[in-house]
Length: 313
Image 1: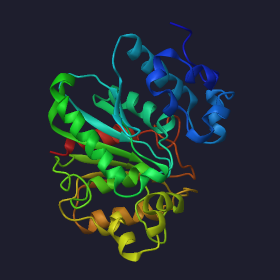
Image 2 (image 1 turned 180 degrees about the vertical axis):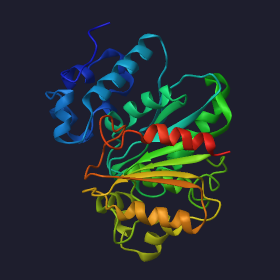
Image 3 (image 1 turned 180 degrees about the horizontal axis):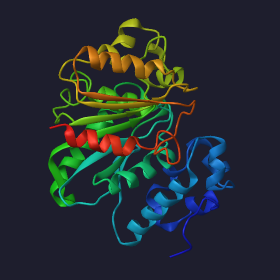
Image 4 (image 1 turned 90 degrees about the vertical axis):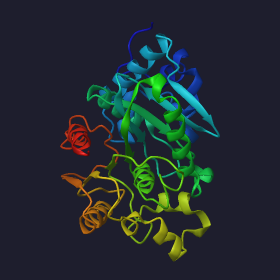
């Protein structure tokens, strides 16, 4: 095996690693400029995202080691939908991780892979989901993609040694909107005839499709219908929460400069109003895109989310 990846590794070497061949085109985001970005080092991505380069390099090394051991690791579900399976087996629960990207990309490099490694250490099987984006993200395609993922995981539960008593869905930014919508009966799990998640972990999520939304996410997700009030209400999750909504762990930076902090506040208020078990972890700072949040005030979120999940019986 070649030398380990480090923050100084150029993205060209990452993109052309032979172990990553099955999913090479999805590794680096934004996908539209991934060829131009190959001259950068992993650490240079901090110019675009608040990335912890050491965590990203660690995750890439874990992925390469799994592939070198002969693990399938990446499962192509068709139509650009796929799963990266960070399995530990042992009849442990799984968390389905949905990275963000404004419904225009899936930033697994930043929010998916490092978070999966962290949840492995916390005793979870971790599966990173890749859903349709851009022009293909028009509702309800992303929800259909999550349904496809959950069905595929269920069909492999025995082989992968997954616990049978529940799962969590973790989403970041626009992926947080997708995860949150999965908790709504009429939009997610029940609509597709699938089990209700035991918990949701929502990380600086887009929640509303109304006035305080993230405009890029709304544009990609609702398309030309984005100005339709009834459609905005249907996909504004704060308006869809009911008493049987899944228990929810929620965090966001108070000064988030991308997705207004009001999104988290509206969601927390909806959860409280409906007596849904939840934890709200507001964080000092202005960052958006911290992911696993190593070395930041938000770093405890994974441990707190894992503890919350254990208490959701």
